Image 1 (cartoon, rainbow, N blue to C red):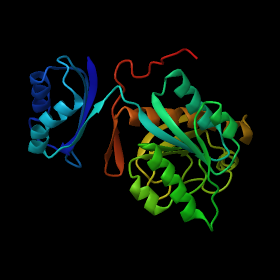
Image 2 (cartoon, rainbow, N blue to C red; image 1 turned 180 degrees about the vertical axis):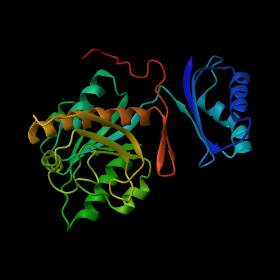
Image 3 (tube, rainbow, N blue to C red; image 1 turned 90 degrees about the horizontal axis):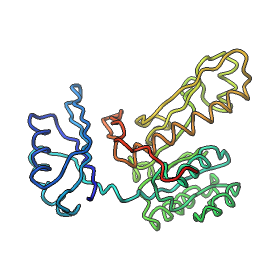
Length: 294
């Protein structure tokens, strides 16, 4: 049986859930997982429904048939084929912990994506990437060539058909134009000290202030630096007995985990932008399972 996920965002209204359930039942589909949220402040309704087409109806057939229901409730919606892997471009600079973590999760099937390219402004990870049979593109960035460099990056994205860019500690600020063009399709990871500790050596600044919690934040990229809608966060406790170098190591572990969870949520269509915030539904049963042990 073909498996799909229906995602819906629309103004709050009576009868949305019933209409979706009736539609799926009448079209020979069985719901396997469902999550919904009604935001009273924005008066927006969000829903994700995982289902199986027991009568073999295709994605195109279901999409065409659902249009009438969607129009009635003014829905922003899509039916996603669960068997298709999202095409992803990874961008990295000289910190490789998130890149290596993503490559491992991808290799064992814990992160079911199709990595179509890795882009970097340095050569440090060329061999690692090419050893995974993934195309590597080194695109140096300077103040003088930034528009040309971004044009090259976007050419990689367009040529590969990438649906998502993930900034695995890519240490360059993207232009407003690129952020707008790829709105909702770029995810960044950073330490969670912002805005308390901006600039160079945030972990050293945190150490000198004696913080007790460090963490990481994954968010969608917008023109406002590090201010995009948050997808995932986590923290870890530190004590007076740890050094600033310990903070860095512990922080990198948290960054890798948070980043992977955020990407996992996005590729499974569990994230909905709700103004400056997000609605993130939990994973369906089996959603975290790996295809291989290692």
